[in-house]
Length: 506
Ligand code: BES
Ligand code: ZN
Ligand code: ZN
Image 1 (cartoon, rainbow, N blue to C red):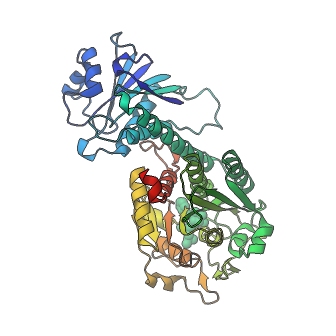
Image 2: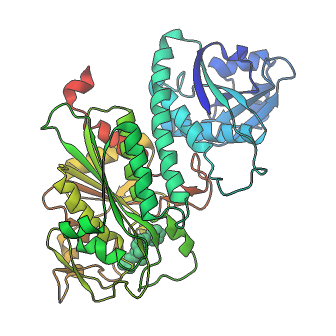
Image 3: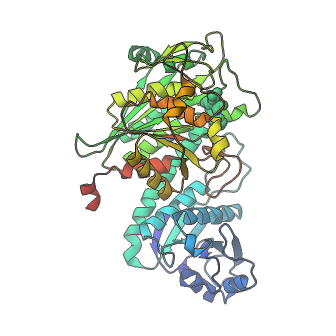
């Protein structure tokens, strides 16, 4: 879909359909919606008076213009209450409106920049949110379906703004929105792709493709190099599979000075998690093709950061392997040695994410990361604690966590901090090795995070457990069913917070 910005009055737009909006509680629409209402002889305000639409988030009403406007139909979408209005409301309303119009066969759509007028948002922020809502909300994964089902695509979205002085800010917002939404959709594609297609080698090749297009530095480690680096924890997980593992390391050097911080993004890349010898129940196991969502988010985020040419330096490290049972698979009771020398007793082979992250965190530090953020579909316990609403967050550094929190708020991707108290350490003490990979039934998300602290040394670190948020079993705002691409936009916003202050003020 092409997204354009045009200096024009909404009433002059000549495509298939026009999107206008309504705040909850407003009975006489003003601004651009008011102008459309007047041309339509008050049809919109009549719908409001008759309470056919009240302006609640997600509500929408379609009216046919019967030749009174150059478009065939006008869709009025609810923005919710003015008091709680935010870019997140713009994303959701845009997604709802455009999905409804696509289902009705619209190809050329014009829209108000929601929030730009009485909403009080900065025009660039509003345009970015509309763009994100459109591209994310219209996303579909249908490469394995025959062509005939589903409506066609919306070809063009035109953002209409009569205030000429806002145009360049709007265009900039659209550009940013396109970059981050397309990156998020790349992450969704990778997560939705089945494991027979997205093997570790294929994942690595896709990362290489991303790197080539952007002149990012790309290093792909094979088993031989993993052995040289002493990555026994990653190799232990990989040894059960006939597919060889890979470790992807992408580097973007955007920072202006050699002494600038380096943000390390470490993403779990299990292309299929059967549990290994500690095999999972078969019901629902197909969802474990998405156990590389953290890795996909890391690749997508560094891609967007590079496309935005942010003056920051970032390394993305993604350990990629399958976790399968076989005659060569690792057994419960096995002891492996991670890259930093820490020995681990593998009690449960299904707690494999923390094992591969152990070596990847060490490797990210070796590559010069001064700040670490890992993203992982790590524990079912996190799903029990926070459900599908919030991503679990753990931190060894308050400042880094505050940055991540602010970024997640701007992105509309909710997180919630869980504790990391020293007392939980007791649960992962091993009789035979330095630590063990599971800590019993209690506080499973926390003991997993505690395990990871053994591999970050003193580097400021935040861990994001996306087990509950990386996919959705029902359409949710601008996230269709399936992979959400969660945390891609948060990570891009986070990188923005590392742009040095002098540069920012310019
Ligand atoms: N990939 C799973 C975690 C998961 C569960 C992700 C549900 C998404 C949805 C992880 O590797 C795992 O199996 N964790 C175990 C750990 C346990 C054995 C300590 C779990 O959470 O059950
Ligand atoms: Zn597992
Ligand atoms: Zn897993």
